[in-house]
Length: 156
Image 1 (cartoon, rainbow, N blue to C red):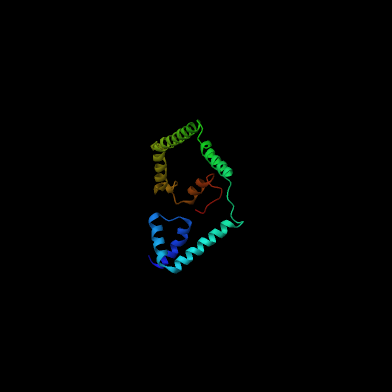
Image 2 (image 1 turned 90 degrees about the vertical axis):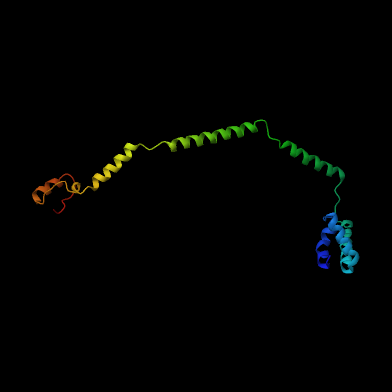
């Protein structure tokens, strides 16, 4: 194990976070490498000083038991009620009903007669002979035809 690898794993080793195999590798490296060994002893000293100082507070056993009981009680109290399943079933039925209504309204064909009427009216408006209802180039025949159809007198 290289010295760099030993230093990277040293903090995890001090915290007891390594697997057994990795911990044995680090211990083997500490036996060989003097600088890593001194760093490990310094880390253990810092850890011991923190535990001895006022910065570290050991939780009383009674408090620890209460915390575990409360945590277990919260997990038990978060059980779904007996109506929980009915609520989900009703919600699913409602969504299914809405989807069925949408499906059946969208799947019905559009009335063919109204579509055909629109197309026929459009074609009729585009017919060439239909554009001139008064077939005359004489001004006296065309001018009276516009009376009552438009609000102004177009030039004829």
